[in-house]
Length: 252
Image 1 (tube, rainbow, N blue to C red):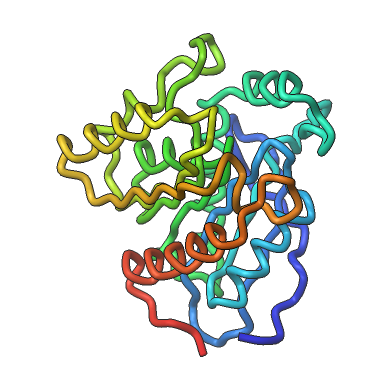
Image 2: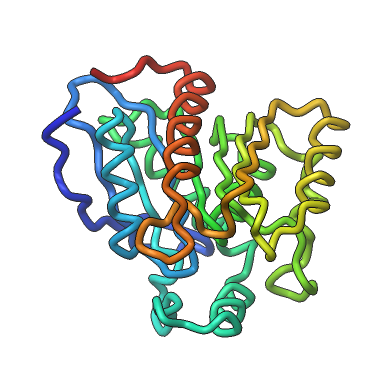
């Protein structure tokens, strides 16, 4: 699909009635499009996330990418942040608040004339994948979730992170596609296998794909961990999964 405009800045109502910023882009079509809430990494709405939004739009999906750090005084991690700085930024973001913001994004999309409000999905990366997965366990508006290497077990629980993501599995009410790198030190293989066991026990609709040559962040072509073969395969699987679960045809 050609002729997609650049994402434009929008605002919607998030957790606690607060105004949240974000980016929105829709395919140039006369029909109501399926839509994706795109949940960013710890680095926020950077050039990579904008590119991913455009890629989805070219495939026929409307996209709303919320800026989870759009509240006054909050900032995404810098590209050159250390590992500890990245972890501190993630720990400071309350899960409950993020879920409220993402639910607000779904509500906003439902009201758009160019969006088919019955065909909404969430796709997240890294930190955002964790939240996309939790959204699939909490929301009744989202119909599918794609999780790119979202952490499954927190190092510790606190007020911002009160529940382990794995403990929410039985609440999952939508199909989920999970994509992991086998060289990802932050998501050990035993965590992935435990996720598989729980999803199977709960009779959930799921697919888990692991890439032997990939580590964490393998999809981000602006970062050193990018693995082209894994990223290409993961992208095609994501599109096929969303088209199947949202019941949409491939755009020409």
